Length: 224
Image (tube, rainbow, N blue to C red; front, side, top):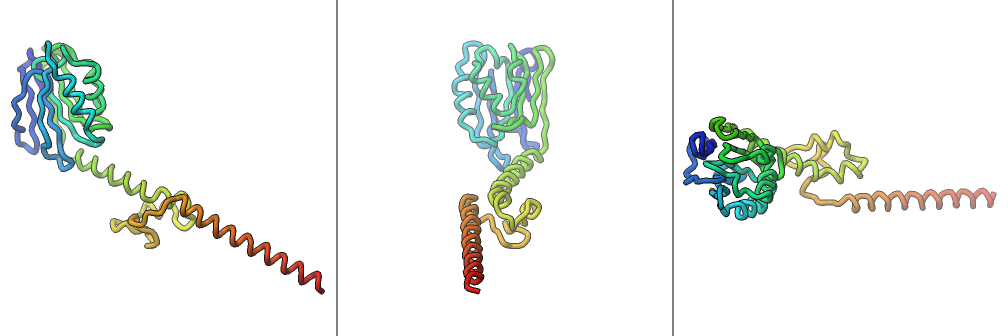
């Protein structure tokens, strides 16, 4: 939840029905989550009048790996000393409304580094506090996307170069990592260049065999 100086003056967070212990202050309160949805770290950066929190805030967010979930809430005023670099670092969490933040506005974000935000809200000063809610499904969704991307990458070289495995068969990969016909396994790392070279070599051998067969047939005709 977020409330600017004119709308209640607070910032707090709750996970699984339990309030996160955090001594919020002027500026931005930030909670970084682990991949399991637990609290990894908590921070408060003063970005109000003459505050010096913009630099450390930008450094923290810029240093996070893609896919990290971050909760942000503004308290009192978070805009007066907020630098363009700090705003940009928040935008990297999927934020689209941070550019509109002004003096003593309320602002809250459930963001993911390098992806679209799960939820975001902004209210001008005097417009009342704001509250964002999201169930735990969004974290599972992030992990599912990562798993799907990993599976897709594992089979990309096979499906694009091997005539023995179709795209539909690769898509039907079981949880054990084996393709439908049990021929390929994700644990076997074979590059597309190696597969392509193998087929080129086989094609070359077949070509030479055909040439030899034709030459032999011609020789037999000449002898008759």
